[in-house]
Image (cartoon, rainbow, N blue to C red):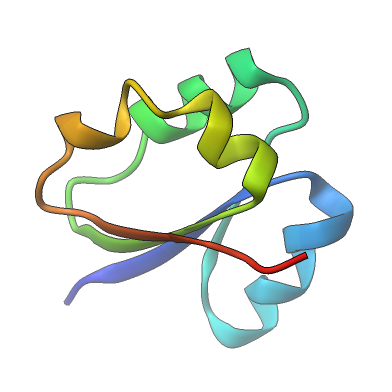
Length: 73
């Protein structure tokens, strides 16, 4: 079964865990890059904060198996 993940500042993303989403807290661009690089292979959808998406622009195309979207602010 595929999993859904979210990457971003803890205070923005922690509530997603209540819905069974895998939460990756990342405050800095380096933390965001590390979290994205460490996604499980069965991850199929990733929600990103706007800051996280900006930090991952060069990495996002590397995972063609992942659908990603930015969270509205």
